[in-house]
Length: 473
Image (tube, rainbow, N blue to C red; front, side, top):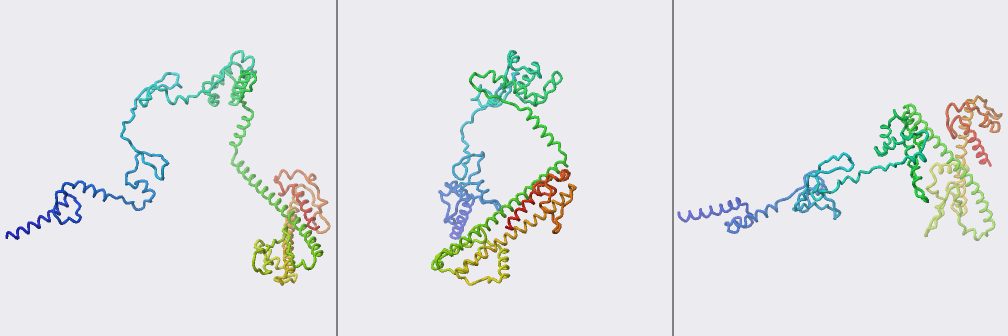
């Protein structure tokens, strides 16, 4: 019995050792089953602190972005700063370091404002070191230096028939009291005792006197800076603002409509100018192309037949199609020179194919050197003819529109449209000039540059007739 009681007591001691270790919150490790030593009990506080630091972790909450979480905790897991700090060192801002020094003392002390003349005393908190110093906001107490004139100066230089000396003195007194705030000066002006003056009148009188005093008191040989107030311009400016403010909604809508119509007229004018420039370019291109072809034919006749094989096709760059030059190394097919460049549109390509089919020309001829050159020149001329036809049709359409406008203008003026013998089209030589049209049409709709019911359409029509005659030649 004694041996069995000893073995059971030993088991109880071993189990109680684990319980004690659990109660003291000691790290178990490999000695969990072993007995409690003296070192475990003495160093229990250190192990407990070490365990607490190791297990202290912060996890980013779900849904919070990484950048936002980085603002809350740093790498050292310290708390965010209490005060904002501004620094340019590194990517992250350095946290404010609150020292343990003693704060500077503050004191409740009286002060006076130099801008006040009644001697009022106020109190506020200030640092004890600043006791006895001037009020810090006294430097903002700026006053306007209003000139002062004597009786002799007024009689010699400042006299004005529209202003008395008493009224001038009253004006300068108000300017000194209210620091040249002329709206307040006009409000406080004594209109019962003196004449009723406007703000512009008060400003004009004050600045005229200041300019005269500055010129009189200036040192001889120097040119002083004189401020000039244009009262007439100020009055006109206020009248315009008053008219602008007093407009009715109908007038505002009418003005917006007129602005939109003016923009449309300017757009049409720019389009017509652009068409005229394109037309002139086509005419110049056609003339230059013809001259270059003649020069090339003369040059080919003078050259020998041996050198004719080494010649390269020369296509003028001024009009038509500009075919690229194949100067790359290696073998290339001569038929590639007949390939139309990508700058030619599909409409022009179809028009070229249709004309060649109508004339019985093969679309893919034998690509000899002479045929390639002549075929490319032929298609370039076809493109030029196609563009000239389009420009001619546009001019005819515009001419027809101008004829209708001219007829409407004659009907509005009470005149009769003259008819020609060949189909009822008015003759350009028999048309009356703009001075012969009555001015009654001006009272209807006012428009410019080619719009209906305007004499400018007649001059534009004459210009188009001249351009068409140039096409015919």
